[in-house]
Amino acid sequence: MSEPIYESNAPLTSKGNLVFKETTRLRFFGIPWPFTHYQIYENDLVVIKGLLNLDEDDCYLYKIADVNIKRSLLQRMFGLSTITCFVASDASGDQIELKNIKHGREIKDFLLSQSEACRLRRRTVATQNLSYHDNDHIEEVHIVDANHDGIPDDFQQ
Picture 1 (cartoon, rainbow, N blue to C red):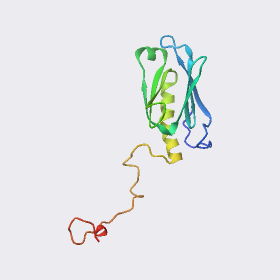
Picture 2: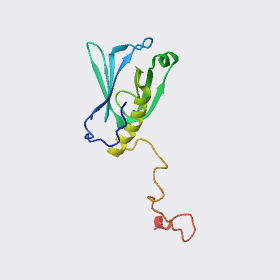
Picture 3: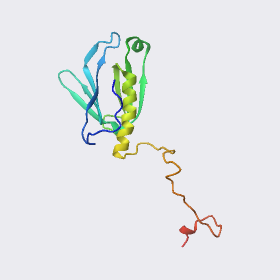
C-alpha cells in the first residue's frame, strides 16, 4: 500500500490527497458491505454510513491519540481487521471504529505515523513526552540559594 506521508503539500485546513479507501465487509465471507465506507486522507479520516440517508463524520488526524487493531479468529481467516482510533476532543466521541476492513495493519501504521506528523506540522501537543528534548536543546537553569534557606534568591524580595 502507500508509504506514510510525513511532508505534505496540502494546507492544514484541507483534507489532502486520498490515501486509503475501504469498505466494511461481511464478517463471515469478506464480501464488501456497502453501507459503511472509510476514507483516509493526508489530514482527515472520513466515515460515511448509510444507504439512502448518508451520515458523514470527519475527524482530523492530529486528534487521533492512539490506534488499536483487533483480529478475531474469523477475521484472521478472511484477512479482516477492526481498527479502533482513540480520539481526543472530537464530537463523534472518544473512539472511531473501522470494522472488518482489509489492509488493517497498513492502515493502523499509517494512522499512527500520519497523526504524529499532522501534530508536528500543526505544532499541536496531544500527549506529554518527557524525553522529547535532547540534552543539547535544554538550557541550564542555575538556581541560586546563597543563604541556604531552601527558597531561591530570585523569589525573595
